[in-house]
Length: 124
Image (cartoon, rainbow, N blue to C red):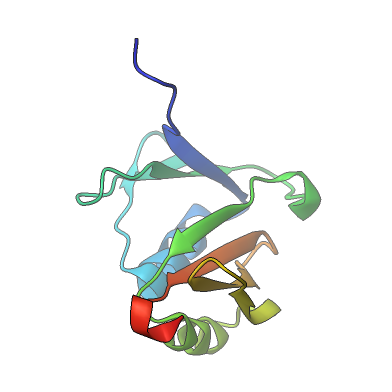
């Protein structure tokens, strides 16, 4: 029997179009609508989990999923996030003895979105 794996990560949002546009501009993700309250991004590469956006009336950020997105250049993603009016919650932070760094931003509904950059061996 195969081990369980992450099927998808789901963010709550109050405006599907706004959240779709935010993640499209930030990460290049393209969403497909499934009904009037749900959109899904399915990655073509890496076999990673899908990302779902669930429209609800009120988002309580402390009760939503907290996911980390691996990116090639965390500094450029943070710059783009600020242009898109995201807030930096945690600035770039090295992860000791791991070979990477992370940061956290907020999406348009104040959900935290983690960013992760894996360093090449020459950066560690």
